[in-house]
Image (cartoon, rainbow over all chains, first blue to last red; front, side, top):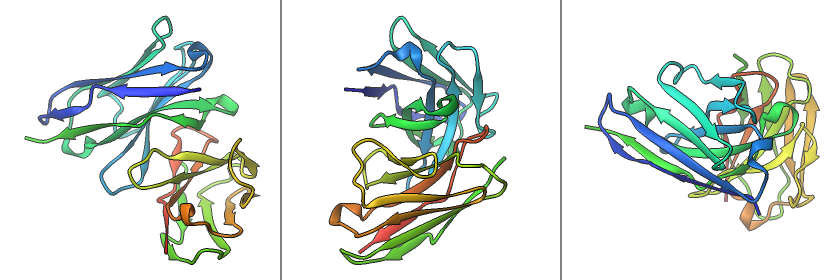
Length: 120
Length: 106
């Protein structure tokens, strides 16, 4: 069965950096585009970033563009999110999500999420 | 960016009720519209994709319709496990965007 397991969350000071990882299993990781989606405490869902199956097409949400970098290692079945210049408003649960459908722009499997807290 | 507007933001219902949630896009998105359910403390789950296709394993009491800018999620008869938050999402163009959510409460 498809499993996505995030790690790397924690507490970081404003301006700091953090790298999230997502270990994928149960499917051919190199065949799917992958996303990060976040949810601030008590708020709705916000799409963060997308990386195509082959690593060629990358897209970011406006709120993280220039600060976050999505990457993948298909040999390790792992997705990453490097987060720099973190702000209080980046505090959220970050979900690793498998893309599906046309252009892999729907979200069919979600990880359990990892909490990132940006606070001094 | 395509804005997605859901209504209502919350509703109260009873087990067995028929419930309808609407989602409106700021421009035409054809049928590139998905619906998700999220229970407290859990990750979201895909219910409906391409506006009206039921995701594998999802009960048939969930149904979706619409195209262009106006979409509807219908739950034909609410079950206890359906009390949760529901989100629409457009998959037409980047950046991908979600509606603000609808909380279905008892």
